[in-house]
Image (cartoon, rainbow, N blue to C red; front, side, top):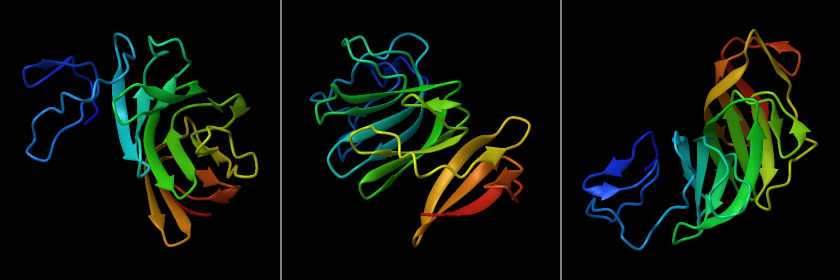
Length: 171
């Protein structure tokens, strides 16, 4: 569970909690500390590890994780990627890659406006760049439709084609 909270039930947690099947907080999962003001907008799971997207600064564990992180099964930071210029608002796991949507401008050192694809190792997929434009482009929701991505948000064009707020992008 992700969000903008400092406690979950009676447990002190900052922005992220893992629940057991009965809804109780999993005491074996202690999420990395992402600092004050942490907001988790998107939560995913790649089959092995939890993924977090949101608005947060570097984890207090000595590794960079700005706005996107993958955690271990016990909650410590496994992979941190620096996403700047805005928050990650949505994420999608697609096999061996992670699709990020939001209102950011840079991902893993590469210019990407509102949409980016990463390998599971955290490397930016430089071949995937369906440029989004608009007053302030942002992707709020992502879905997989067969072999295509569906995006919803605030944009006027995708890859130079007029698409207002909803688009399908080839894999």
